[in-house]
Length: 430
Image (cartoon, rainbow, N blue to C red; front, side, top):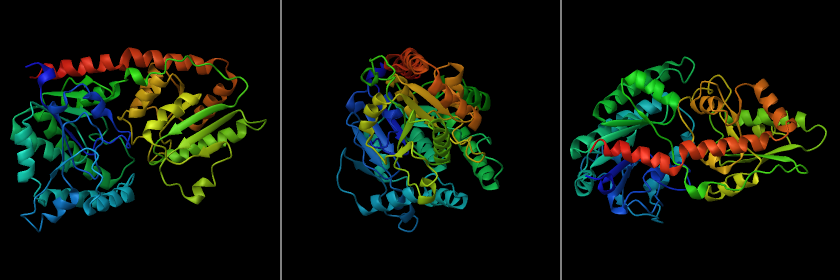
């Protein structure tokens, strides 16, 4: 069978919706024929990605209700762009918003118990699997045990080949300082992911650092694969420094898990550097709620602009001089994202703008950008101060890193390069 004719079923936690910005999977499979691509997801939301032919959603509230109501039918087909927001959707949206960026270990244990007891192996799910009849199932190795269990059930039920994707650290004990709840939960996560690996025919990893640790831990030979940089996302205009205007830095994204405090650090540095006039400013676009006490710590050279639709982010990046990549420098948060690789980084490469990357040296994207010299990198406050000082004082540094990141992105992350690697791996297992 040619991979172009294969039917591919992708399992994700969230639906494919452009508002989230988390579009790695949908971008990777944009080459598929519409009728050959399906998606199963388990969180609130309505997809808007038109290239996928079939969607199936399992609502967590229905799973919980099925513990008592054993005849309750779980799961349903979803049409793209459905406008009706039912009660289940609204309840889940409120719950996820409330606990976003927070890990309350007893609640995580409770969720897994409820899913274990729930009747999610439903007639509707089985019918969807039988009707679509996939040749390949693709999924991320998630930290949610209930999601992984769903994937393994579907692989066994369909007899399809399966491909896993490691894009986060959910199997080591290195993410957080000692925390008993975290260590116990991680033990079960790691054991569960090992079960995933045993049913896969191939595995992808999001970065070189992720590959090293995954291959060593699970005894596999994974393939490095990132989100592809599409041709229409590449800014072909060479960056030209504006000598008579302030340097504009931009950050657009989540400010949770300590990132807001990194922004506060940047603000303090800008207050000092701009003591003789406005030289560098920072615009922050984020939907993260920021309380009044935190806002009071942010100086006049940082503009908190609220959220912005994902479709407008590229235009904002093209108007900026420096794109800020931010992770936390606080001890309790600084390694949370150590094996992840933000989807925004590939977009950054295509924007042809200088990148200022802030985060612990043990984080995969920080290591990646520093090793390949495609960004100005800072891993503590002093390095951050010196980095911003370089941006202020060094002539042509913005043009240098704009070109370096763009050239590197085209060479290593372009659509043709990534999709060729993806198709080649999938073809090898069918």
